[in-house]
Image (tube, rainbow, N blue to C red):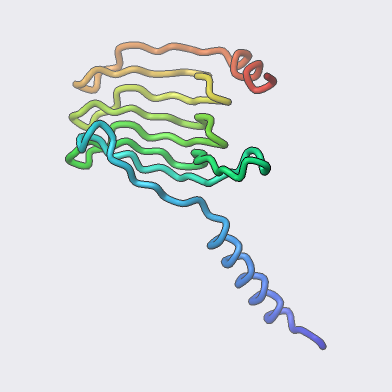
Length: 137
């Protein structure tokens, strides 16, 4: 049996889409604080101990918190239930309040803080060494 390059490429593409479809994280929408906040997050069910047969919900991707009007309040990412990457917090009027990077659950690099009018009020530099030591634990 001989395949052409086009057939092989087509089969590889179909296989890749199938893997993505079945392995993608689930999107979970939850009401928090009554009906005042909406949490939208990517989760995966993980069985930490196969003997117990209980699955645990783990944050594994985008994480957003919105108010009851749908305005974005907090946006960030999780990697295996640990905050990771860029996180942004917004004032209720929609302007940025805080922005910075998280590495292994710890703040690293430059974090900026703005007031509700959009004026930069402070900048804090966090060392990378603390985050690296947390990752090693």
